[in-house]
Image (cartoon, rainbow, N blue to C red; front, side, top):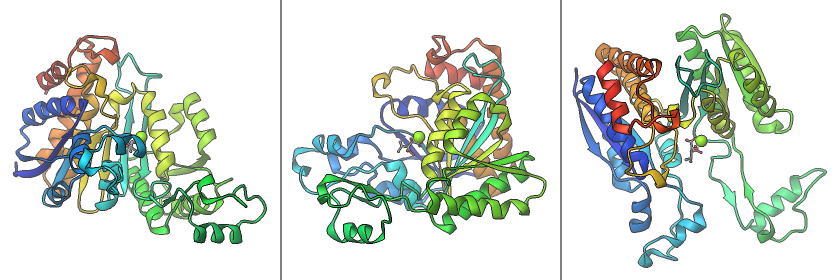
Amino acid sequence: MTQYRIAWLPGDGIGRDVSEATKLVLDAVGLKADYIHGDIGWEFWCREGDALPKRTVDLLKSTDAAFFGAITSKPAKEAAKELAPELKDKGFAYRSPIVRMRQLLDLYVCLRPVHAYPGNPLNYKEGIEMVVFRENTEDLYAGVEFSPVPEDVAACLNKNSKSFAPFNGLKGDEYAISTKINTKKGSERIIRAAFEYAKKYNRKKVTCVHKANVVRATDGLFLQIAKDMAPEYPGIAFDHANIDAFCMWALKNPHNYDVLVAPNLYGDIISDLCVQMVGGLGFGSSGNIGKDYAVFEPTHGSAPKYAGQYKVNPIAAILAGKLMLDWLGERKGDRHLQEAAVKIEKAVAAVIREGKARTYDMGGTTSTLDMAKAIVKKL
Ligand code: IPM
Ligand code: MG
């Protein structure tokens, strides 16, 4: 195998526990890599006023891919209170490091597999097989927000609002605005990625999730692009649903869904809904994938109350490691890596099916590292 350079960002909280577990599995499949530690997370916010220091961004730019554990995030006002005294009131603003990585590195695809491993006691139904393609850089995550609302923005809104304008006559500090920005380019490339994935892996259907009946401009644009692209993929069925109806139907008939594609925020929401049907966050892995770089992470947060206890389920993180091997293997044309990825998934499936190793979320007492070791044994 070739020697790769992996940015290794365990983060804080249980991010460290699950990263350690993932490393056991990556070592066992013989991934030859330099793991270069990167600083990220809450302690760097408190100490330096930046949860994603520039040196870490530089590290990302000099590696083949990154593995990210989890970090603690808090709302901007609470975060400001925990800054080191010398950094307080100096204009530091907390922003989520993962959202920043996605935008800085243009990781426009958020790939989230949803697979009911047979024998998982947490499966809502057996046989669920979906994959979420979440747009990962724009939409309500664009980061263009106003609180208070400046006068020029208010004037522009007043001029352009037609019938109902709840903000008319309000002072700037009496409301707030978060903008939802969806570009044609951003929408096209995520929808394209979803269809291409469906084609490559012989999936039957792509469903576009939106709210175009109300959010006409942005979601209307997204849906129209999906509708226009669908005929380019004659072998793949296409349908679409408003996000509220989708949530209801997906819960009722999860087997009716296959590949899902959605703007950023809806994609965020439906990925949690869908992964809960196959065991919850202990089973949710993400690939944040761009043209030239990708960051792989378990979808869960840092659960600070369990930090360092080696209690949580590492499967989400291990599957994120598997996604990393898939991506690197394909990108570098490295067949060994692709085989290693398949092996990892088979080993995970075998451990779940066997039912001996069960972390606390699955009703057992197996520790984080023992779960990883059980998976290693099956490799
Ligand atoms: C996710 C998470 C993140 C998001 C948070 C931690 C910023 O919920 O990856 O789904 O909203 O994208
Ligand atoms: Mg989320």
